[in-house]
Every structure is written in structure tokens, then in C-alpha cells.
Length: 172
Length: 211
Image (cartoon, rainbow over all chains, first blue to last red; front, side):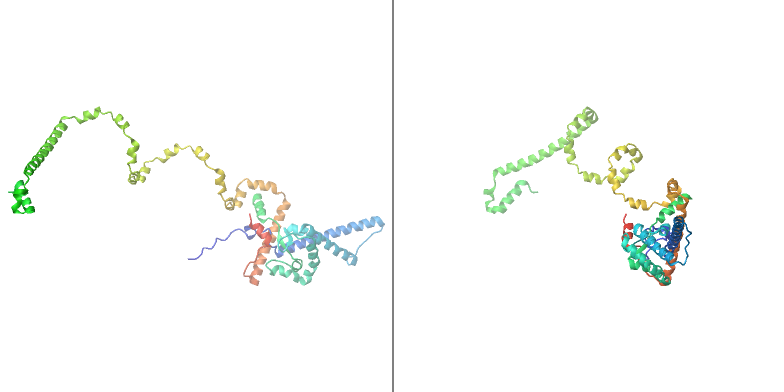
């Protein structure tokens, strides 16, 4: 006698179960990073413009910055470090990650903490070397990149997919 | 033909021998024997007379008239019903009762009409009844999608959930998660992941599993 197989769930995977706490996939993480790049850059440029304006007012001279200026680049790197480290340490997520509904946690699921946030931020740039640091996100079943493995962190979904579906049904 | 005395003599002779039968004959034995014969005949006669008398009496007496004179209620009052019932084997009586036929005669609707349902419910411990209900199992059987679409719950959610921006975010996130799933499935096929692996960090997945 064959064992009857359960009927296939016709609902899409994203709503067949609530994904909160599940490892986030490559596309969500990459889209979050893209959003963070835009946000951080915009904020940097806004800050730079404000600083330039303020310096112009204070000194009475027009101040301009070159894109290739090492000072600007160094300030930009420091700004990115602060942006990511503070966001991860204080909120477990950046602006881009919040938009995409993901957050950073420790590998066992606990909160991140400032120390691990700093370690993660320091290891983050190394994942961009040939993009190899992000390959484990595709290949590993826990979706952890190089900087996650170094810092002992993981990225998980934090939004309620089922609730979103109910809201969409309610608005139909 | 042997008479009773001749038979008696033969017995004495057999017991004591032929030479002694004259000395063993009790003169009173003859009288006793005769008396027995007379008594037997008298008894038979008396029995016959009694039967005949009874028949005559029964023919002469109007039993119905006699019974009409009897106060049955007084008679019954003198009967100790408990003693009578003690002698009744109730189990044997019940064994002879066809319960199905008996129940077939019961009009259940009329019977229920006499039942005060309110009083029955007053005796029900609702708390104990609810304690036996597995609420999680009941809720898990609720089709939330239909509930939202077909009831006012959807309107409540729509009013409370807010803006176009949050809806747009939901759409973007849904699309991203869909692409995540698609990518993971294809990479899994290429890389031949045999087992899906844990869905998330142990503490988060365990917390979600617990109600």
C-alpha cells in the first residue's frame, strides 16, 4: 500500500509560510545593498554640499571638491564605515535592508551587538574582491557571505509576508 | 386368590419355619389388617365425596358475584409490594423486554419538547468544555485569505494598514522574495542540494515554531 502524498500547497512559497526569521536570499540582500549604496551616497553628497556651503559662507571663498580627491575619498570611506557599523550595531539593519525587509543577526539568531557590527563592517569590503565573497550566499544553505562568516552573523527576513498578502487581499 | 391373612401367614411361616407359624400369628394382626382395609376404603370414599361436593358448590356459586363483593383496593393495600418485588428477578424480566421495540414507541420529539434545554446547559461546565478545545487546531483550519476577502475584517485591515508607500514596499519585497526563491531553486538544482537545510538560525526558527 503506497503512502498517500500530501496535496501540493497551491499558494506561492512566499505566502505558504511566514518567512520571518528565514535566511534571506541573494536578490533581497543585493537589492538592499543597492538601496544602501544610493542612500549612503546621497547622504554623503548632501553632507558634502552642506559642508561646502558652510565653508563658503564662513571663509567667504568658493570651495569645490574633486571626485578624485583623496581627502574626499577617505571621508567617503569613513562615512560608509560609520553608516554601516552604526546601522548594524544600533538597528541590526541599514536603510536599504529595512526597505527590503531583511536584518542582520548573529549566526544563532540572537541580536547583533556593536562588536560584531564593527567586525562585519571591516570584513565587508573584502567580499567585493572579484565578488567572490558573495558566492557563498548563492551556494551555502545558510546564505552567509564571507563577511558573515568572519563576523559570525547571518541575514534573515524580518517582514511578515503573510500579513502583506492579507493587506493586498484587503485592498482588492 | 390370596387374601391378606393368608399372605401374612405365609410370611410368618417363611420367617419362623412351618412348625412355628401357629405360635407366630398375632391375633391382633388380623384386626389391624382389617382396619387398614376399612381405612383405605373410607379415604377413597371421602375423597370422592369431597370432589363431588366441590363440583356441586362451584356449579352453585356465582363466582363473579363473589368477586364483585371483594374490595380489590383493600385487598391490594394489604399486599406488601416490597416483599412481592423482592421475589421478582428483575434481570429475567428485563431480559424478556425487547428494548428496540420499546424505544420504537418513544416519540423522541415529544420527549425533547419536555426537556428544558436551559436547565441542561446550566449544568454544563462551559469552562471545562472550552479547555478541551484545541484552539490552535481550530484557528489553523481557518482560511485567512477567504476571511479577509469575504468579511469586514478585510476592510478593517485596509483602513489600518495605511498608505500607498507601504503597499509599494510590500510589492517590492514580495518580488524580491520571489526572485530569491527562484534563484535558490535553480542553484539547488545545479549544485544538487539533496537536503534543503535549516530555514533559518535555530533560535529564530524554534521561536516561530512555538505558539
